Amino acid sequence: MCLLSFSSSPFLFHFLVFSSFDVFTPSFYISSLLIHILTSSFPSLIPLQQVHFDFMDPPAPETLMRALELLNYLGALDDEGELTQVGSLMAEFPLDPQLSKMIVASPQFKCSNEAVSIAAMLSIPNVFVRPREAARAADEAKAKFAHIDGDHLTLLNVYHAYKQHSGNDNGGGGYTGMDEDGGKGSSVGDWCFQNYLNSRALKSADNVRRQLVGLCNRMGIELVSTDFKSKEYYTNIRKAITSGYFMQVAHLSARDKKYLTAKDHEAVFLHPSTSLNDKPEWVLYHEFVLTSRNYIRTVTDIRGEWLVDLAPHYFDLENFPAGEAKRSLERLYVKREGGRR
Image (cartoon, rainbow, N blue to C red; front, side, top):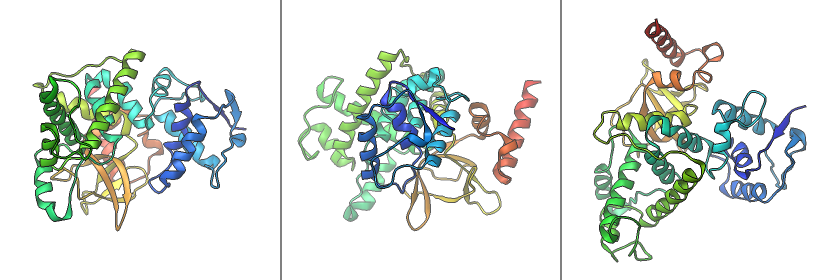
């Protein structure tokens, strides 16, 4: 019999279930599920078969097992299913587990300030406005924020620019003086309007970030940054993102120049909205979106060696499917072992 162990935090069970759903799960179902979980009282240890949800389509036991496996890979649960120290910190954040892990791991990469900013930007609606009648102008405006390494850092650039302009309005801190429609009521409103940015979404991101900073301070997670002038500034941020999203990566096939997800070998395409101008060998993605094609959206260029360094337990070659991704990882493991001698 399989047992589920729950901590006192409602967010642990939240991401046990929520994290295991794919992009096709209706948002109203997820919202209802979260309300049910957050308002329910579970015993500390219950059989998996007895977990009950008052929904027409409750999550299957297999789904819960997938979620447990995900948390184990993230280091939130140990092999006995007990909550780890990392998991205890992750459980305090009302975020997807990957985002929580990114924040918890970010101090070791000296980029926790940036990690909470990225988490906040990923927790809100799309900040980029692209009206059909002004698509070219909107694309040109977005290009001003684009980062060569991908979309996560592009979002960080947007947030930094937003804070710079909102700081100019009120002496360096909050976000004030915005019209309800986010239009031309203040200089920061003008700036958002002129740059085709969703001012309400950015205001929400600022509020989310403030709450995440409060949680970090309460839990003793140090808020630090790498020197902006350092060549490692953006590299460290990308490593922190990888520490949470190593299970959502795709590898570029050298044969046909198409991306395949690392383990499932699902053919995917970079979303047209990406800031990437080329096709790196390895990319990390935030979302898998199915439209006319299988798209991966909000994508960042990463290095294969980060995967074997940060998640060797997940990229265990003994249980890894054959293919170009495995051969690339094999070379990286050989290179790493050679460097240790």
